[in-house]
Image (cartoon, rainbow, N blue to C red; front, side, top):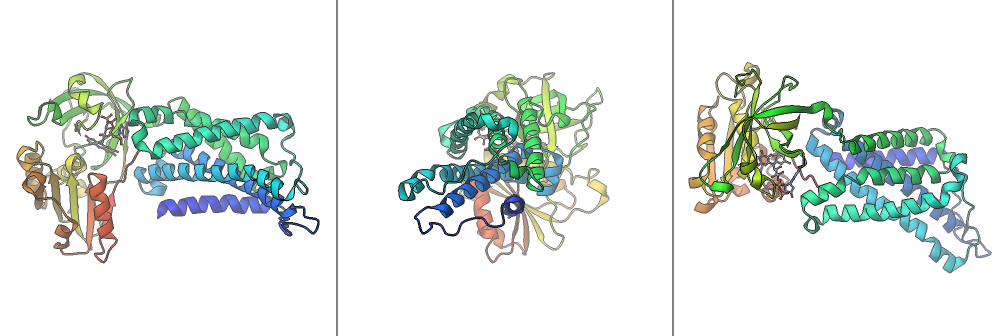
Length: 460
Ligand SMILES: Cc1cc2nc3c(=O)[nH]c(=O)nc-3n(C[C@H](O)[C@H](O)[C@H](O)COP(=O)(O)OP(=O)(O)OC[C@H]3O[C@@H](n4cnc5c(N)ncnc54)[C@H](O)[C@@H]3O)c2cc1C
């Protein structure tokens, strides 16, 4: 909902600013005059080209700004996951409006075929020092448009390209944006540089370009980056290379701490991109290293190509770059609702931190945390290396947290109906696979009056 509202407000602002500089009579009537000249159609085509172009480039500027992971956007959107979703949907909307822009431009062929060239407006005057760049700016825009479409298609058709290769290609997006800024500046009519559109577009193009250069320089998240050290690494359980690993990191003095449930971007290796992992410990729960550095815990499951190699790569003493913390998954809902936590698989990590924050001596601000019922979904409870830790944390939490385990190997798959026995209305905090999250989301929308909190991270 927030995403739709943000995009709606964005497009409306651009449209209103365009209407303020557009001629009062748009010249659409008649579409075809008595002599058969398509005056109105040509004008309609021209307005469509300009408006769709303004929409598209302004949405791309928004995409560039959102990619900076600024705390301001985190606050405005209610979480970094929402910032990511807006980034993705603004990118899709930018591609759709770019298609409309291209379609409007190409429509000249059929207008000519049906009514001829008569009535076609002259080219509008542009910034004087760019008058001669028209041809170059058009070609540049066309090629950048094709590449933009290919990139959006590769984002949506995730099977075509692995995440790693996709993210490498994705890093070229700021270059495409800068090319499209040149296209827009060179072809935008001189009259559009008047207030208020000129100020709005000028600011957006300038800020978007700065953001693009910032990304290209690799400075995103720089102010929140910390050079930490691996204090300890251990495999959990006896599943060999399939076992999750626990990594304890010693943080430098620049680290300002975190809240339980937050995550960080972690780079163990300078040749590999940063991967997001939840901080699976509560603030202060692990104390400090002998050198006085605050410690935090990551629990990493070997879910993909890179994480499967970590048990061989990581050693105590190694450098690790940590950016963050981010996120607002704090497990605190309304006092008037029954709190239910649902974790599945490695989605248990934020709950380990939230439960640790409820242990005697660690409870934040001395406030009594609301009672909560926890559900944990696991493949096989008999071999789950995190289950005994979870059971202990639940039992010792203040107040104790009743835990229901759903072990797939024993045919105990969690169904939303299992939550219906809770005294409602419910506040459900969910972290786990998308499929289960979507099923809970469907049920939450029904007559159950459930409120579902989940960080919907699809970073692609
Ligand atoms: C907010 C958040 C918190 C997470 N917390 C944990 C945790 O506590 N423990 C844990 O084991 N896993 C966690 N994950 C998942 C973890 O980030 C991925 O399993 C890991 O990055 C996979 O990397 P890979 O190269 O081994 O896998 P690949 O096979 O390359 O990719 C598998 C999938 O992981 C995701 N992914 C891969 N690389 C990245 C990246 N650089 N940035 C974002 N997503 C990526 C993509 O969706 C991809 O499709 C979390 C993910 C998110 C978004």
